[in-house]
Image (cartoon, rainbow, N blue to C red; front, side):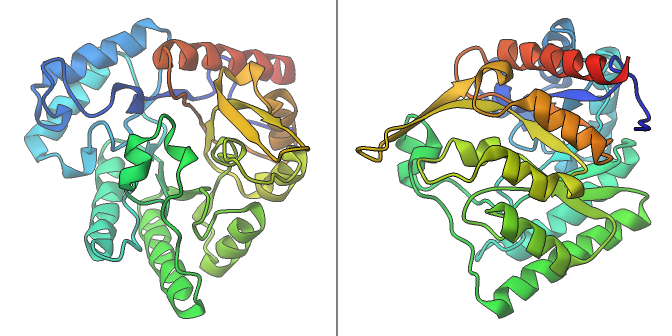
Length: 311
């Protein structure tokens, strides 16, 4: 097993989605003074992170004017933080109303990421919350968007992702597709099939199986799911959930917990991923409670696993 990092230097990033999209005054963080960005970045740094993913539910770096992008670069450096990847959220290139707009945005983001020295951008097909999802305690308890699986529409989706992969490759980057229910990459089998339809070496999978185990639906055995998708993984959103199933009633309950306490055995999964050649960055996520505190705990858990494998 040859990897380019040690346990201490492997990129394990904080998800900035924990901050939402507002500044300390309740205004949009996108348009806030750079010092507002700096406050949140300093907090992440003080929690021990050396990397972040500025998920575009926080700051859309792809939409920053040149002078604002310079400010962003400055506050990032002042906080001693780097970016191994940038994730997009709910900006599907197959959105029925805004797909063309989001495709343009996706291309723009690749070029801005290249300016920032970021080698990876994560895309997904999940779309805006429905009103029911917005009202729910946990949004995954309500049904959301379903991709059109007709062959002709699916072919358009693969073509648009291939277009992004070609752009990324020309920039010396890669892209990854975040697995998410009811999309073209909404099961492990469909994700692998779609990746083969895209058929581009600069496109891989983001095997965020936490998105699946939280659903109140039948579930494949987790090791079996990882075995299908880990060979294609090039970036990895990691989070965990407890899950209980009552066979008599069919009732399923799930809720977010730290990575070492949930259904997914990440020690086994990370071990298997490295055996298969995974060398991408990790992104720690968590919903609810002290999200930042939990993702900091998750970072240390990931590093402890890497230490047993690499040191």
